[in-house]
Image 1 (cartoon, one colour):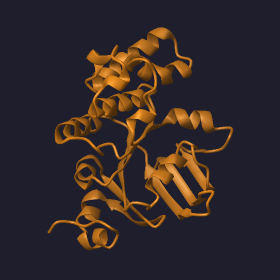
Image 2 (image 1 turned 45 degrees about the vertical axis):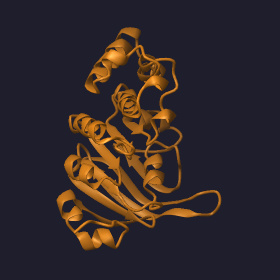
Image 3 (image 1 turned 180 degrees about the vertical axis):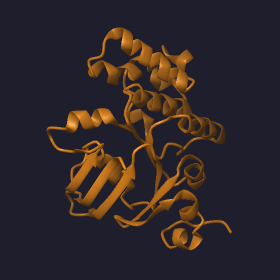
Image 4 (image 1 turned 30 degrees about the horizontal axis):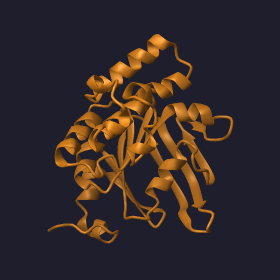
Length: 237
C-alpha cells in the first residue's frame, strides 16, 4: 500500500510550554479522502501545519515516502497544498489572476503554462470571470474558492484544507462542497462540519487532547454518537 502521509510518534509544544500533540502516529493512504475532526484545541490545525513543514515537532513525518527535513522541504511543499481557514491569509496580490499565478510563478514555470494553470483552476472553481478583479473586493465565499484555486494551480498531490466551509452561507457552502467533491487527489479535511465530512470523506480521524482517539470509515465514526459526544460533539437526537 502506498501512503500519502506517515507520521510516527509526533510531539509538539508551543513556546509557552503548551503541549498540543502527544505521541501521535497515523498513516493516510494515497488517493484517500480523510476527515480530521475534534473539539476546539484538539490540535487539528497544529497537525495540518506539520504536513508542509510550517511547524516542526519531535518525531518523523513522511509525505509520499519523503521524510520532511531541511533538504526535502521545497519538494514537500510542492506536493502538499494547504488551504487556510481564513482566505485573506492566502490572497495578497493585486488581482485574482495574480494570486492564482503566484505559486506557479515561484515554481519557475514558463508563462504559457502559468496562464493555462490559472485559467484551468479558476474555471474549476467557477471564478474565471473574476480573474481581473481585486481579490479584496470578493465576497467571503468567492475568496474561499479562489484560495482553493491558488493551491490547485500548483498541482499538489495532497490537498489539505482547514475548516473550508466555516463562515459560509448555505449556498456558498454547497458550491464549495461540489468543487471539492470533484477534486481527484488525496485530501485531508479538518472541520467541525460533520455533514460536509460525511459527504466528502471515506475515512475519519478523531483527534482529542492531541491524541488520535479513533480512525476508521467515515460512516462508522460518525454513527458512533457516544464516541462523538464524549469528545465534545453535541449532537441533536
